[in-house]
Amino acid sequence: MGAESMDRIGLRRKPKQERSIQRLDLILAAAAKIIAEKGVSAMRMTELAIAAKVPIGSVYQYFPEKAAIVKALFDQHASAIQAKMAAMFADVQSIDQALDVVCATIDWYYDSYHNDPVYLGVWMGTETDQDLLQLNIEHSGHVAGIFRDAVRQLAPDLCDEEMYARTYLFSHLIGAVIRLAAVSEEALARRMLDEWKRVIRASLFATTVARAA
Image (tube, rainbow, N blue to C red; front, side, top):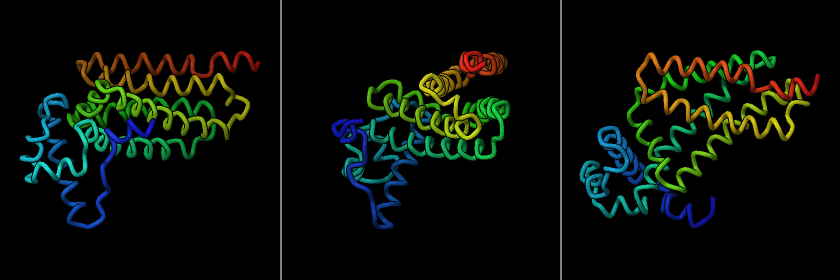
């Protein structure tokens, strides 16, 4: 992501003193509450300042615009998800187990977030802004990297350019499937997730394994 994009969606300044850190936390907590109730598009900076009980100047002191607030909240969730993925793949001992972990990850992802209005609001908000969309894509790349590192230790010959593209694609599509499931009726959501897990088991390694054989 370029410097110009980061200027508009990044923190204007990072708080160092405890009072400033607390003020930033108040702003983000208030933003999370508003997003959960109304969504990103309905949030206004003046409303946010009132909800956080801080001057409007304090909001702009840290965030140049609304997209920067969405990024800060998205970063919190993305870091937690990437840490969870790393932990889940840490002890993988075989390709079959890796597929089991991928499928378990899908269930964990859905169970953890489909009833979280803040995360859903922030996640949907990343789809409406080009720079935030790029941030979401980069997150998919980080998750794909965690999976590739686990597979590389098990079967180095599988980690070629084809597998790089495939794990990146599947990582991003998992996010899209979870988003669709999260806004669908529960029974339909579970069926869609089961179908997606079947697709992953059947195709994630299919061509590469067949070629190697």
